[in-house]
Image 1 (cartoon, rainbow, N blue to C red):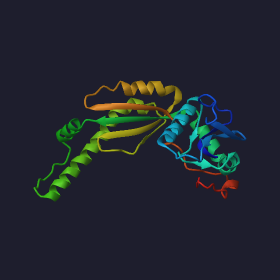
Image 2 (cartoon, rainbow, N blue to C red):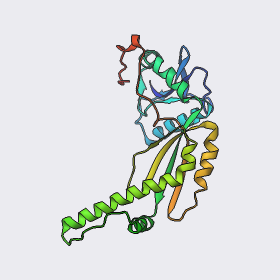
Image 3 (cartoon, helix red, strand yellow):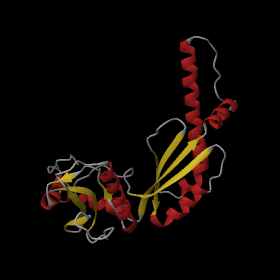
Image 4 (spheres, rainbow, N blue to C red):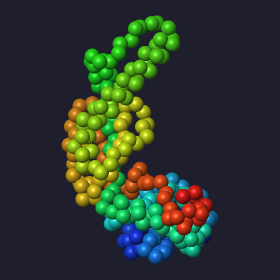
Length: 241
């Protein structure tokens, strides 16, 4: 039976949920531990499994730093998990756990009403005006220019609305956008500040914008690239870390 690898924590990190045969457990090497769970070979992986991966990591991060691994990362057994993940990456993993200690990731989603956004763009005296034109190419260019103006307005407006919350964050990064009316940002915040930031987001009461807060989450967005100890640089894992 293969193992799902969820994330790396310090040895002794509390595990979420009741003890079950399929529950997460720790595979320990020195002061580090991989959080693993059984991956049965007799059934297909489902969306439920991916959801459980995130739920497990989100529960773990409430009790200390976690270096999350991408869903789908596996190992053949406990020993391969130790020798192919923990040992060759120990220098990097320890540094990440120290850096993330006390911090969690939170996501903020702002969705703007289209009419509100278009009106704001139309009222902006600094926006370049179209020269007109009735051809298809002219109309396409005009539509693209409006879309760019909406995105620029959305980003500036989001800065204004999220200013207090972003000032509480250690780092802020833009997440991949789904479409031009939605602003998605990740904040790296201290664990004890999560309720304060959530309250700030919840208090945004502005017509034409819906706000959503998600957290605490493991710090996927803020992980640093692998930096190995000099004597481990020739020890590449099968996952390319």
